[in-house]
Image: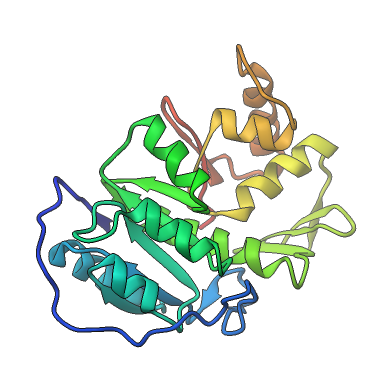
Length: 259
C-alpha cells in the first residue's frame, strides 16, 4: 500500500488535542519490542492539515498495529501529549514544521519524522538541523514509512536498552557475539559483511542509499565508485542463500526484504 501525495490541499480539521507525549525526556515507556523486531502498539501523532493525507496515514498505520491521533496545526502539535513518534508536515497553516520541531526538541527527545513535499536538499538539511530524526519526501510508500518509524523508535529505545539481537523472519544477528543465523544454521560472515547486514536489518523494508550505507558501515565520507559495496552485497547474497532478500533499488541503493 502506498500513500501518494501531490501538492498539499489546505483543509482545517476541527478539534483540539489533549494527546501528550509519553516520553518528554526521551524514554519510550509505552514502546514494546516484539521478538520479530517490530514495534507493538506505538502511539503516533500525525501533524498534517490535508485531511485526505492524514486519513490515509491513519488507515495505513493502524493496519500495522499502531495507534494514530491526528492534529492539523502547529499549535495543537505543541500542546499534544501521549505519543511515541511524531509525523510532522512542514507546511502547516499557523507555525511551520521547522519551528514546531525546534520547540519540541528544546524540551523533549521524542522521535520526529518530517513528511513533506519539499524534496530539495536544503529543506532536508533544515529539517535535520531543527532536530528531526528523519526526513521523508512525498510521495512515499507506506512500507518504507513504517520501517522508518520502527527504526527511530529502536534508536531511541536503545539508549535505555542496547540492542543485542536483530531478528527478521528466519534471519537473526547476535550483536554481542557477532554471529549470524538462518534458523538454526550459522552463517559465517566477515566483519564488514556483518556490519553491512546489521545496518540493513536496523530498518527492514526501508531503502538504504548507497552513500548512507558507505558512511555508516565504512565510517567515512565516501566519494567515487561504490564497487566495494557492490562486492559485499554480492557476497552477502551468496552466503545467505537467498539473493532476493537484498533487493537492489536502481539508482538509489538496497532494501532488505526477508519473506
